[in-house]
Image (cartoon, rainbow, N blue to C red; front, side):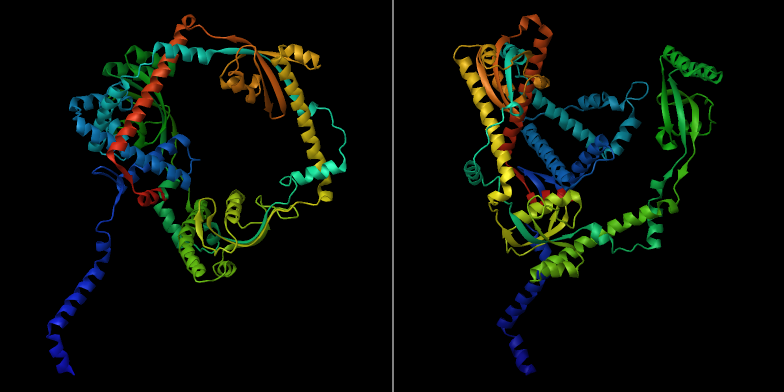
Length: 631
């Protein structure tokens, strides 16, 4: 047998099979590399320029930090916010690439001197003496996670982009006639006669016959039918549910406390007042006066006379002072004392320590429960994702939602509800979610077809949610006897509305026939009121019903209109139109012209960028955009 195998191995067929086997194992071993050989790793492409995922992540992180600084600690980057910011970050990077392509085509260049001048002119980089401060620039770069070369490249690109934008915006000159027409349009005022016909003031209609009510009941089934009800099983998997199973050891709490100690400790701070002047002798004079008991107001005047300035710096720790010598002077001086003059790159400083804030530290006992909850939340989030995969596999294997919910300890409820979350007896249906997530669960129940196999899906409002609809009960017209009072109330309300609509129509017809609205109202024993000075500005809405504003400015002089409002009907007639004179208010006309010019310039630039994007062949990788938006 072995001899036969050896003879077979020597043949060309066996050698070919052996080579094929080696190649197969080779491809299997480097399968990931082969599969990813032509895989696109750019979030976006602009021609032959890529927007890398890492660059997009950095841009998105900066934007989130900017929003955080503006919104404050209450800001929370939920999935919707992250998606919006991710799209904006990628869009900005794509526009940057698009403009760079056009810059290269037009050979736009920015001299180094122009970049230096621009950077040195940035107000945030100026020190106490009003001049450019490299330490302040470096502090900004550190906080923005930018290298100096990267920052210079951004400035150079921005200046080049400004050259293109200014060339496009240069033609944004609105015609004088357009500015005057807009001025007249914005400033136009109208006076009107109005007659209001509220539904509440309509005369009560005669009692209807039962046959009329029954017809009304049958002709309006949407008003008097039961809602659609659905029987469903709802299961949720959230980190809050899983967290109940998490056990956090004391060792883990101690380790987390050591890792986060800086969050619970505050260094010593000094409350400082500072004088900065350029002359050492002046600094010494100010220090002597300050020690002698001069007030801060007097010191401020003395500093300004020396062409310097005085500032209240507030509470600052050592790291908050830009120079070690300044920090040493501040933190070796007793409260209420004044330092000797200290020289830095900015000039001569004199500091007064008005108070000393001792360092603070929260011991582990004070933050023990907080740390345990934080660690439990972190573990629960990871465990929830792991369990979600197991639940999805079990559902795909044919298990019912109720079985899976019991086995994996999901929040579960069997419900019969309408779309508002109420049962047939009017009581609120209990759901295994917090109140803020009820609407999301109900939407999922009423978007799921009966008999559809359940699957666990991640949602923005709930966490992981699975729905299985067992039965759908369609709407049904309620018996007339059961809703008699509702039918009567609805019929009465409609009758009042028809009566007021007919009265309003009669007034309008009288005005169209040649009467003034005041005359028509007097004949109908109704009151009319005059409203003057109405403009198109939103703040004028309280003087007239909002439904009347647009129709009123479409009417010619002495014409009338009728509109339905939230509480009835209004008939109005334009009695006076006052158009402003552009020559009478030159500054206002100039503002309108400037705003129009700015608007046209912005539109031109937007259209220009859109045209460049169209020519550049922009492609967005939606898969990587989804990855970018994930926490």
